[in-house]
Image (cartoon, rainbow, N blue to C red; front, side):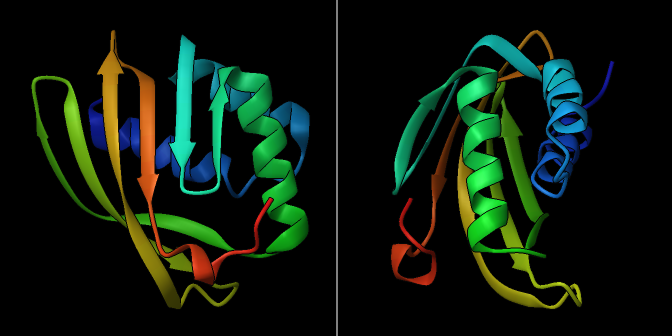
Length: 121
């Protein structure tokens, strides 16, 4: 059983995987069947919609990755401060996510970031 930080690291890793099959294999191990994702630009549900969104993100922002900076957790609820990294692993931006976990899987992620810093989908 993974702890939340390990699961969220895998979530961040999934955003760096450009090959759809590999990304989906990883997402299947960490997402609940009824997973939902929301950020200022979009609302999604399920693995396929999330993987499509990640693929589009790669087209618009190649080489960008994410890394958690701080995590505060209680009662399967988690607040994550994360950094956006360029291809040289330098911090170029950041945001926060509120994450619900159920049975050691990500159930719901709501991301918060400055919309002006990202291309609209």
